[in-house]
Image (cartoon, rainbow, N blue to C red; front, side, top):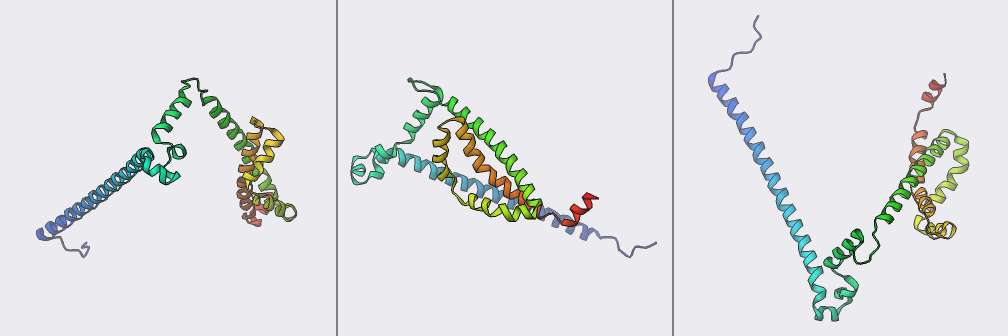
Length: 202
């Protein structure tokens, strides 16, 4: 049974093959142009960064510039080489400098514990208030008001209450993460259709 389509001639087959090859070549040229453009942009960005580091390193060492503005005074702006040297001392503990690893570990552990506590409490309270219209109407305004307080303003209070201890760091981490988890869980619970909850209770 005939399909109604005539067979392609040799010329049409050659034209179709040439068109396909042309499309492939055009796509390859476009890809090469994108790669070349990306390399040029990266090279320019790297060059600008190196110029910035060189200016930061050498401009403050010019006495005339330092006398004109404190921006070029090496006492205030330091230099990349001095920063690298100080970091090497802090990480290696040379020249009687206390290594920074102990403090880094304390900070990471306190932040991790505070993150887990804050996310857990925030998720639980968010789901509870999101599932209860009465509790939401009563407590949500207070939580919104607490969330509006800048966290950095509460840090001195935490330091006074707990001191510069691990407990204080955990408390700050909990304050930062609690409201993020709370409002996400709250909005998630509020967005669930009541019909789904009723069907689940059956």
